[in-house]
Image (cartoon, rainbow, N blue to C red; front, side):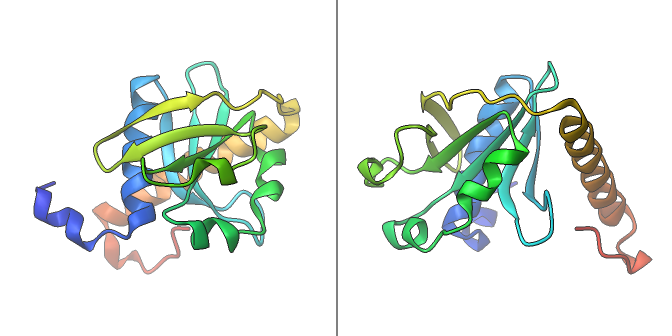
Length: 152
């Protein structure tokens, strides 16, 4: 991707890109804008090398964070939860009992590890299947965009 291609990204998408690079460096595969259940859409979900599932919510501004009233609903769908923000974000707004990642379009760094709250086996299986299915459908959609299916 050329640098100019980043101009079309929204600020939160740039944060997700950097956070996804961080996850990849830890051996995670990730999917952006994944729907764990009806009414929720996480910015980035990662599946780790030991089956761990992390959710990362990307916030580009104070207003973006303050308008998010669904984030606590994401906690039951992951082993660890993180916020990804840029280095100018007022991090004192973010709850201390959540993880913190500082990111930009090119990378990210974990500042505070989110506490671990392991998923139940059945929930983990559901989420692994959802991650795999979503990723595979999106890849198929790139290869064959004329299929006309909603790839979620």
